[in-house]
Image (cartoon, rainbow over all chains, first blue to last red; front, top):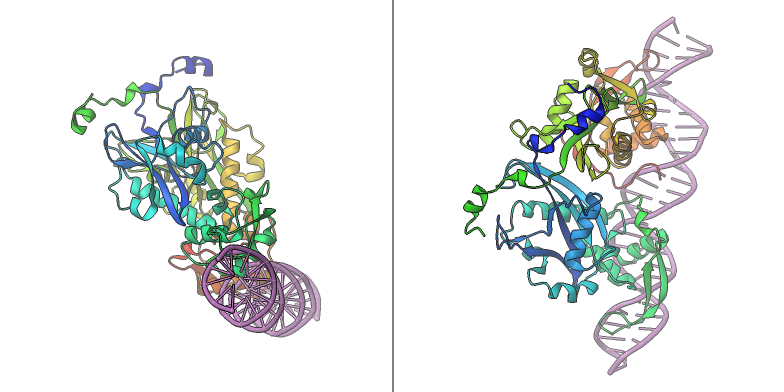
Length: 241
Length: 241
DNA sequence: GTAATAGTGTCTCTAAGACACTATTAC
DNA sequence: GTAATAGTGTCTTAGAGACACTATTAC
């Protein structure tokens, strides 16, 4: 039909094909008062107007270089946070998940510390942090209940062999705070000595002084911040059986 | 603008938006003569006509229920295999990967035993198994070199804590054959006793008789097949540091 | 017998699990 | 002193790593 790639491309028109809708959704998690929270927005538009949903939307081909930057842009718009932990979880596509037709969404998971977002988010009317256990009881838009559960599952499984929970804390933090974050994300308690041995011998933290524990009572604790490159660390043993 | 969801959906037209192209690509792997092989097709159409590429293509909204079945359909069309190990690796999207414009592909990885495919594939002219090391030296279409490497990396990392290499063997097999598959996928040799202890105590195989080892020389070996549900098994320790 | 492959015995080493213990702070 | 929290000592246990050993087959 066409003689060359140039000729083919000149005559190519994407709208000739039946293309599924492609969106991005992000499960943004933090820990607040020791409990896992997830950021949801109240939809202002159809479909599922006025229902709670994961932040997300469509790719802007002129603004977004790639899928990851598109997810990062949406995250920053909602939280003001620019350097979070952000990873792709799974891409879900089927005929049933959107009333507008066959649709595909690329699900991302982000972890951010609560502190820097609180003022930013309070100033945006349709966005709020929900405790995870409450969030999954809301009647969420689309298949977002399923998506939120997939992101939660990824978070739990990576907690077992990485130091991912580090990203929900703001530096510096104590080992006890870090352990509590691990326990909340793992849904399991961890023996203190084992936890300290594991984290300290992984050499992923650096001590940056001392401070009173949260609550102001008890012995002064060592404060830590993540070392450069700690993100790459992967343990040989998984936690929690 | 619209009063109800019904009204909104009636007036909705997907072609009003700038939608990126969405495709599916599959890295299909097996082991042949002890070496990892990957299935490639020679493209018959623009763009990248006559270049080697991963099998893949567009979603058929009328045939495919969801992304996974779309990937399974393409895999079956090329190999004749209907029950492989098939998993999503990552979805890659950016402005540069396809000359037709912003495009997104959902990358899958499949593992199949060589045996049942050999005749089927020999009868299809544009498809062949390439040794992995040779495949990555071909001048592949699109960003398929990158995709193939991502699928390979997933394969390697899952070999360290699952029994995924089981899927490149046809049952029954000996423990030695299984160990060789693990070693090839891990790119590392494993100590025999450790390997046997690990696999046997995981209780994922059942013995189904005895047979001569491949080569016909040496002591008769126990033959095994995977137990139902073995797919779910996850080791607490990872292999290979 | 030899060559080849299957399979075992057993010691060492690493890191988790349990749990009692000591240390430091505010009051 | 007590309450509260930080941090340690040390024994046990699971499973990897090393490596020499025995067992079974064809010839």
